[in-house]
Image 1 (cartoon, helix red, strand yellow):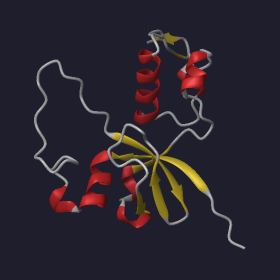
Image 2 (spheres, one colour):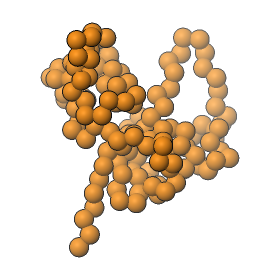
Image 3 (cartoon, rainbow, N blue to C red):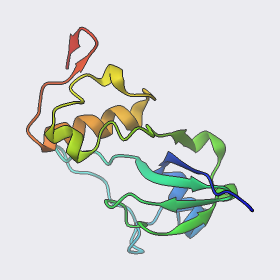
Length: 137
């Protein structure tokens, strides 16, 4: 009997797009049009997508992604474009409502996608003050 293991991960969006659409179409947006430059004052894109690593496949679980619910082979994504996500769900909406993630020091994995995701989630819920140890962000 084979046991499926699932590991929450972050995939860099460019690597995901290349794995799904191929390297020649990676410069195109999901709707097939050429990617456009941002205007001044426009929010930069969050370049990480939430996914789950299941043995040899990757399932995209990020509801904000155009590729949500898609499954790709794990070998199609370079290993340096994958980071392990916080598997303790320490920055979910329910946690934000309970204000239990007011200190980023409690994140299991402290890297760009985890920090930016938590900061954005807190900002979207009008929790603008976040600590990292003794430092207030």
